Length: 149
View (tube, rainbow, N blue to C red):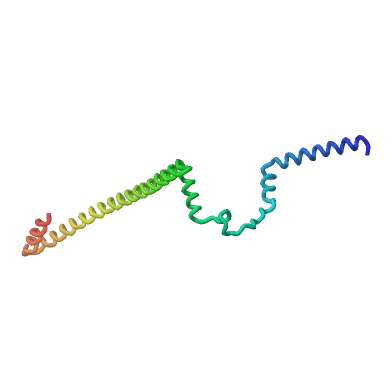
């Protein structure tokens, strides 16, 4: 090999080393290498040993220990949950009040319509009774309508 070929080979090796080092520093390469690692060896200890067995009470103790360790976070979580529930409840009450106001206005309109209808019926009955020649029916209607007014 000539000196020029040796120099080119050395520089290409340096570039290859540089690229390889840069590639292994990327997060993708680190994740990829972790995914393709060999699985851990299975322990030959019996499953009933204290090191290999985890019971549910231990898990709940770990949860409580974790809660005590991060007490501020748990208090904040429960406070925020409470505030969220109160907000949802208040929003529901707001819409319930709006529905009740709409129902009230509809009932007031219906009451006014019924009052107008009753006035019209009274006036038409009195007009028909006044047309009767004896006048007994008109006087009786006046007595009835005077009691209700």
